Image 1 (cartoon, rainbow, N blue to C red):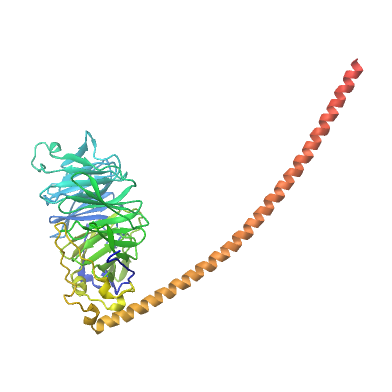
Image 2 (cartoon, one colour; image 1 turned 120 degrees about the vertical axis):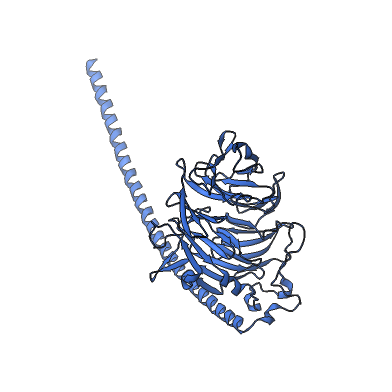
Length: 492
C-alpha cells in the first residue's frame, strides 16, 4: 500500500490536570459536594450555555459558560435522556434524544418546557434508544439521528424557526438510511452535509452520499467493533479517522480506500477532538486521553483527567462499558469534560498545545523500519481537490531529524528506557501468566482424570446393580410361572 505507515508509539510526556490547577475550572451546582465524581456521559457547548447529561442523576443540567453559574435542569418525565446535539443555525436550541426513542427540541432561553418533538408518521422519532445526534451546516440545517437498533434518520429543518406557528410541519423526516450488514455503533457527518461516515459492529467503516444514500466507499481494516469515527478537518470529506475496540486508530484516504496511517491507540477510543490541523486528542471511557501528531504518527502526551482537591487526588474514571456513553466538547483550546454528578470540568489546553504544536521528531522515534524519504506523510486533499496545508512538513528534502535539538534527544533516550521497562514488565507478566496457565492445566488434567475415574466407577456400580436386579426379576418371573403352573395342574 503506497504511503502506508504503521506506528506503535509511547507518549513522550505524561500530564495530569492536578499538576496545573490553574488550567482547569469547574461548573458545579451548589447542592453538589466538592469531591470529584466519576466522568461520564455527554457535555455540549451551545452558544454561551453548556449542557451536561448525567446518567447517574438521570438529568440534563444547564450552565452559563460566561458567568460559570448553574441555570436549571431540563425535565422530561416520560423517559430518560441518552444523548444530545445542536442545530447549527441556532445558538439557543438543544436537541435531546431519549431512551424511548423520542427526540425533543429545547429552547435554552426558556428551558421550562420543551419546544417541540420530532415524529415519524405520528409515531416517535425512533422505536428504540437514541444513541447519537449530529447536525450539518447553517446553509442546509439537518439533524441526523442514530438509534440503538442501528437505524439512521435524516431530518430536514430548513423551515424551522422558534417563532413558527406550526413547529411540527417545519421539521420533516427526509431520509432513512438502508439497513446495514451489521449494527452501526457510531457515525459522523461532514460539515457541508454531503457525506456521512459510519462505523459498524463488524469493524467496517462506510462513507455514504447523503443525496442518494449510496455507499461511496467501504474501508476495511479494524478487527473489532468501530467505536469512533470522524472526518479529518472541517474542510475535508476525503479523509476519515476511525478508532476501534482493537485499540487502533486508522487514518483513511476515502478517494483510494487505503489506510494511510495505523496507530496503536493504547486504549479503546470513544471520540476525537482536533485541536490543530495535525494534533489529535483521543479520549476513552477511562481517566486517560492521548495527544497525537498525525503528521508523524507520534504520541506526544498522555493526559490524566483528575483533580487535586483539598490535598487529595481523586481520579475521574469512567466505569461504564457501552460505546456511546461519553462525549467531550472543544472550543478555542477549552476541553469540556462531563461528570456523573452533572458538573462540568473545563480544561484549558493552550499551553500543552503550544508546547507540542511545532514538534519535529528524530528518526529514532519511527518504528516503521524504512527510510524517512520513502515514508513521507501522504498528501491529504479536501473535497475540492486542494491539498491541505501541513505546517509541520519542511520544504526541503532533508530529513526532519537533523533539525532536532538536545531536548529532543533526551526525549528519545527517555522514550527508549520507558520502552525497555515496559517490554521487560510485559515479558515478566507473560511468563507469570504462562506459569499460572501451565499450573491450571495440570490441575485441570488431574481433576478431569479424577472425574473420569469416578464416572467410570459409578457406571460399573450401576451396571452391577442393574445386572443383579435383572437376575432377581428373571428368577421372580420363573418362580411365579412355576407357581401358576402348579395351581392350574391341581385344579385340573
